[in-house]
Image 1 (cartoon, rainbow, N blue to C red):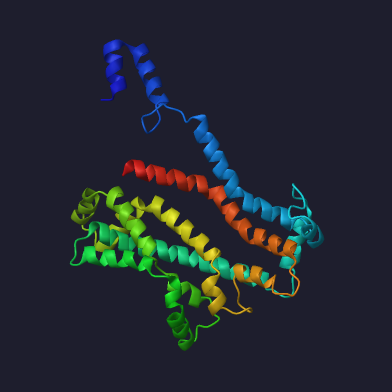
Image 2 (image 1 turned 120 degrees about the horizontal axis):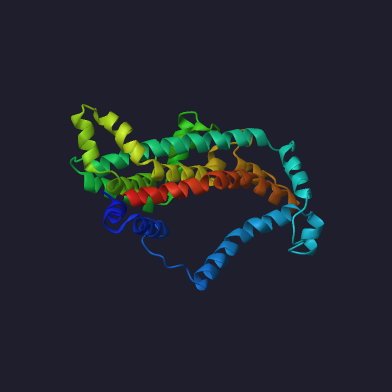
Length: 305
């Protein structure tokens, strides 16, 4: 029986309504204290510092090369000329924008789904299954994050060339099918968010090991998995280092297209900045629509854990 019902029986319906109203006013963390002016000032300063590079890119993309050469900040408000820069980038004969957009989308989506699935599977194994060498193996996986990516580029390039994947999209997708950070992220989350009782109940009902993972662990891991998928998609969408080595200009990604805009004796910074903002625009739209839901899911998962 809830405390509101008990109050209704002992003190009457009026006291019960007052008690329910007080409970609704208390936030989830249990504190009614509001943030001070200093907190809002610091958050506002961080927001302005974070958004200024994007705003500056928008201003340069709305200008022309002459104005940029005369003044580092040619104007304070963007205008409609930015859309003309978009059209120039898309219709340029020197780059294959639509091919690059397809490749970046394919790499981002496929890598995100793969990293989420395999990282959640490995995280479930490390967090909830008992097997020999579980601790040292997890330490080894985490330790690989300290190894610079550049150390493995030469052997990876030789391997991709030997199997005939040079210049192909799968040479970018396959090395990123699973990440050490993803395994660590999902291991930490499932250790707290998934009770052993749910796993034992599924096994008693006759579920196999994989069925238990798919029907019990995967739904519990959805908030963290969504954030991991978002991080992986953004990383692959903006990845330049490895695609610039293994891909060609005939089969590029969007960061390579932006780079090709400045491969001239004269760099049109307004065109380059317009291309940069055009490449960044899908990420901004994605964050606008799903960012709030993802944060809410993470908070809900943290409270349940």
